[in-house]
Structures are given as C-alpha cells and as structure tokens.
Image (tube, rainbow, N blue to C red):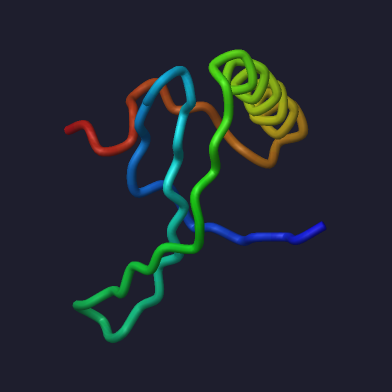
Length: 79
C-alpha cells in the first residue's frame, strides 16, 4: 500500500456520481512565494464521501476532546 502526503485540496468535482479530489503539496520558495504541486487525485463514490466525512468529524471531535484542537466558531478565511 502506498502512502501519499498532501497539504491540501486544490479542486473537487462530481462527475457521473464519482467525487474527484485533487491533492496538492505546498512548498515555500521564499518568504513571498509558494509553489503548489499536484500529488494525485482521490476518487470515491458519494456514499464513500459521506462515510469519510463522518470519520473526519469524529477525528476532529476526538482531537478537541483531547485538547489538541480548539473549536473556532468563525470559519477560517472569513473576516
């Protein structure tokens, strides 16, 4: 089994019932410029996406309960 590390998602699309998620890595070239490169695409069915959402929510809640994260009522990026 291959392990792929990704810093984030560049794009998500739904085509013919398949969710496609483009994974990216971000490297800092200098203080003012970053480089974004694609590392692969994750493809899954809608039911698989919903199960993944449930699992991610449970992991986030566990990290909050363990004191690793704190919940912020304001979404990131909104001012």
